[in-house]
Length: 92
Image 1 (cartoon, helix red, strand yellow):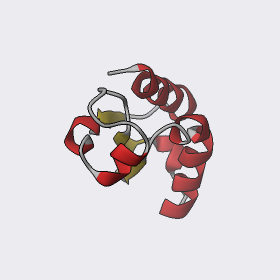
Image 2 (spheres, helix red, strand yellow):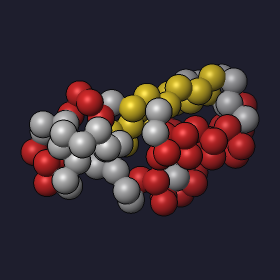
Image 3 (cartoon, helix red, strand yellow):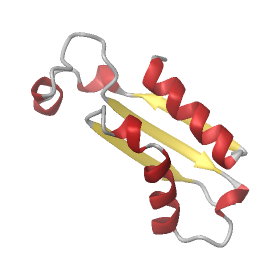
């Protein structure tokens, strides 16, 4: 995993102490898609697409929208540098 993936993982671990966390770099699957090409990400092995699966007791009492907002705010710097980000929340 590259610099952005490691940053995403570190921030999520430090902020939410998850019981389950997967940070999946799906960039290779999308390297020839129009969006990746538009952002200059095709063929260079750059990090462009991430899928995160997270489960944390920190999310107890929050709805999905609130959790998404917390995560997106935390990862704002990284998300601005990539083309796509998807978040899967596992309930405790």
